[in-house]
Length: 105
Image (cartoon, rainbow, N blue to C red; front, side, top):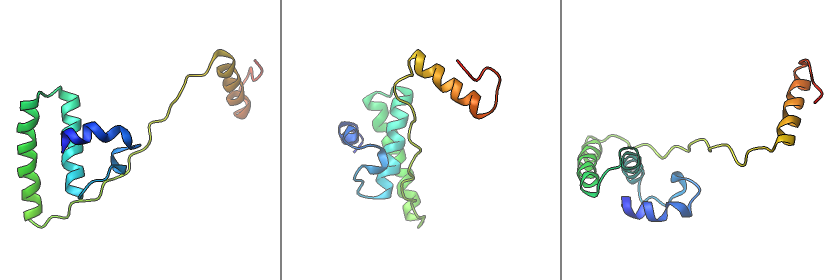
């Protein structure tokens, strides 16, 4: 599942939009994916972690614990940086808005 998610994740705007078969799949795969990226896991290490996570998730389900739905994350803001003229105009706008000295550029 992790490798399939790695292949197809670019087709969706975020992990929450991916067509997960269950909430447990979402939490298992996104946790493993994050761990794989953060720690540069090898294939063998990823498989070991997946086995551990699967045992942990199975225990949670067997205890009757409700697996929460995926939680939509805040989007990453950004884009292209402003050019010099745009940046100066934005600074002037902020200064004028808050009545700071030097409002004109």
